[in-house]
Image 1 (tube, helix red, strand yellow):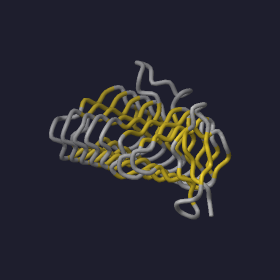
Image 2 (cartoon, one colour):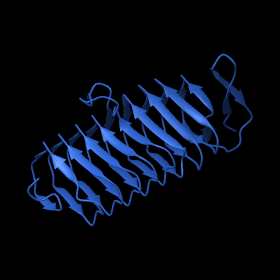
Image 3 (cartoon, one colour):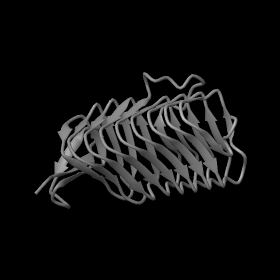
Image 4 (tube, rainbow, N blue to C red):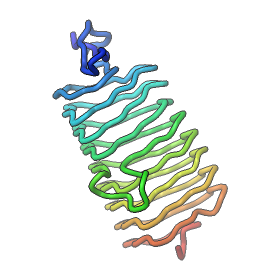
Length: 212
């Protein structure tokens, strides 16, 4: 059975008996080369330069923070407390749903949204029904980016997107700025008109983002 991980007083991973075979249960700081990871309720998992060979799943109430990590599978969270991915490469998809606190893919802290501290996402990004602020900033996205049904404010800024950016049915302020989008930019059924400017769009500008 796979070990679980918890945090000791020196902030390193302590291995204990497995809870679930096939996944490492992460509650602490990971500097190792790991298989799939589960972040359980109440845990804070910090992947610091960690190589993850499988998927990362964040359960309700869990927190995932990454810096310089590589995830060779997908990242999926449902009702997580907080998610922050900085300087991280994900070979699969990133799906962040119904998060309670802020969600950030890339560096959304400064005005320039640096690609150096951003993230590289080889698949798609989906931000859906998140309750608090969510942002994708300074990321290189090989697939599509979708932001839909979010209750909190949404910021999409300074990204390189090979696919389509679609923002729909968001309930709060929506800002889309200075992105390079090879596909379409489509906005529809948002409660507030999106603030969209400075974007370079290779495809069509549709819906509420037409002409922006």
